[in-house]
Image (cartoon, rainbow, N blue to C red; front, side, top):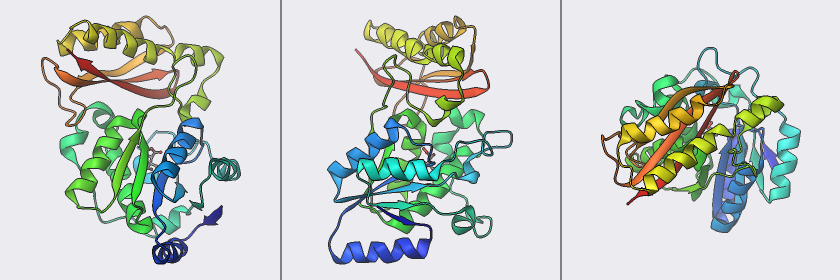
Amino acid sequence: MLTLTTIAGVRSRREEAARTGVRIALVPTMGALHDGHLALVRRGRELADEVWASVFVNPAQFGPGEDFERYPRDLERDAALLAGAGASVLFAPATKEMFPRPSATVVDLPALTGGLCGAHRPGHFRGVALIVAKLLNVVQPHVAVFGAKDWQQAAVIRRLVEDLDMPVRIEVHPTVREDDGLARSSRNAYLDAGQRRAATVLHRALQRAAAAAAGGERRRAALEAILAAEVAAEPLARLQYAAAVDPDTLEARESVSGRALLALAVFVGATRLIDNIVVEVP
Ligand code: PAF
């Protein structure tokens, strides 16, 4: 696996790939890789000839008081995992390479970011949309692969690409879970043993609400109350939001029908975890 740290280096390798007709899948990450990321790499290999991964802890998507400073960083380990999963290129730029000066450009999708995580992390999705737009412009992949755990992020990126006619397919891969249902996340590393047990409440709550939806519960407020009640029953957990919304527009309607996204953000200790599930409401 080739490791590149400069935009110029990526562009020159990209030109070479274009000359030989190699199709590229990009897996953008912030490092601290786990099986969920490696599943994205494996999916990328099914969709393209080469998988290129990026590791960049993007300061633009962290708010004041969030975990930018303590976000786990171990590039050597990440590189070994990516190489093992079959990635061909790792792009690991320094902050100065991506942001030689503060961006004067704002990439904002207010229609998709007013609710869910966007309501609690002001500016977060502007930071995500900006860095993803930059990475797509630098790498110019044929396909880019993201995880469904960050559902709102994936919805934002899909719409960004559609609105700006960016010539890339966005692939969203199902959430990878631990045996007990906890969604794989780099932030799980912050949990102590008791918190790790408590964190299974997200999956449990989603399963309960999904069962209610499968049983015909259509009232948004009732589904959200089921999610909230399950989280409230776990002493180490504190609910940030519970939502039942349209999976594409992320709009909340009084009554859900067809497909619905059930989504949660929960603090377990100081660690903020998110999870979601898409259900068919009969
Ligand atoms: O999902 C992530 O890890 C990040 O938000 C992303 C897409 C790599 C942008 O920094």
